[in-house]
Length: 605
Image (cartoon, rainbow, N blue to C red; front, side, top):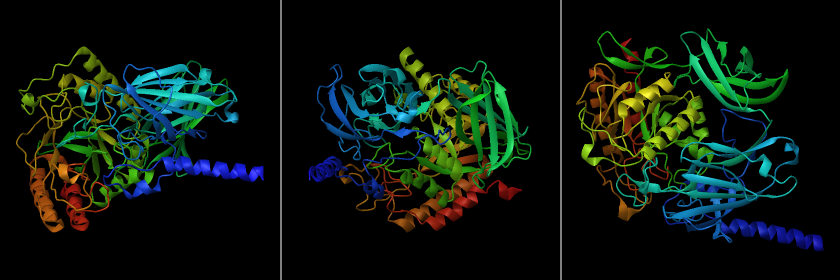
């Protein structure tokens, strides 16, 4: 009888916990919001490009409190928040602004599996916006600044073996009042600015590792020489051997070893090349060996592909993929969700926009002043989508200097702001370097926070010479720096400048918008009025612009980005509604002309 009562009480307790969480707010939501189980949130392995067999997901319901910035740790909490959704989001179950004058505290308890005894335990955060301090059992284990790069702490010495441990996280976010990179976040969303995102917004997880373990894997393909270079960084590379095996659908096709942290150079002379038409990935097994014993191993993948530019016989410089002229055509992707804001409700949702982009006939996504979770880039790798990766903008928007072509002055940042930009940009490059899909780094967008443009672009190119660098997308242009001259024009495509020494691209155009009733964010705050009468008129306009673009391709454009894949908050110019429930343009017509544009150079052969 007592056992029955106990089981009944436990069941009631679980029901009560679940009843405490539900999506909140009156705004529209995606269909995936209804699929969320607070006990199993985003359960997929968070970093497929460097995967270990054992790990533990810490997403779920945590305690939270919002206190003044200088207040000590809370003695009691305000309630529960669903991690990893930002506090301002509906899916957090809270949907409250944090603000720059407050601190967000998180707390949860966790246990370490007994089979991990004797291993070091790493605590990972996919991303937290912006300053993070972490304690385990009241012992501070680390701090981090940066809203877009993953980080981790070794918490081994702070753990209590065989007992429940307490994790405490403190977050401060200056939001739009700070100089830190923040993308389109604003405390007062309007026009092109969206709701702020504060705190944990990507998966939190743990994994066991040996005393000396693989920290990072950096893969660099060279299709001209038929070489794949894999550099393995360990905690101690001295007197260690890195072993890499390459598999083609389960068949071993190359293997090699190196010592002391030197790159493993693997010969793939007849490699299968990656492209949007054939996104082939090689599987990798990477191991760390000490004194003849394998102490650590991870699974990974890589692709053989090459992004470059080349001048043709007509003296026009064009983008190339795998040494062939290749027109890159895609959508602007803000990476926002009506219910999760920066965080997709599920992995299926995270993949959805990528698959739709392919279905529309594009081969490119410009990830617009935001960085995504690791799984998003793996999805792009697998699906075959080229990515232009923006650095999230920050600091001031110099309106008075914007688009002063070749004459505009760069913003003068404070030393603190400049140093932080460099630190965060390098961290993003390091985190994303090995993803084959990324073809272009975009350092600045439309003059926002743009400083030392040529220097930053040249540093980026030196740090990663394997990719294209876009120094100023639609912003203040210079005669040098980077590989592209990137123009923006709304609504129709235009070419009003031309660079004979760099490739010419149209980084943004379009913005054809109309309203779909019952699928808008906040109807009283819509900032992009309907420009067309419906699907047919919008699709007709899209085709008109596409035909203009075709003529500009003959004059020298080598890539273009259409705004945009979905509506976002007050913007109604998406190919789909913000909740992803309605495709707003005729997909078949759009796909047909998109494919014609993507084949622009191939058809000349």
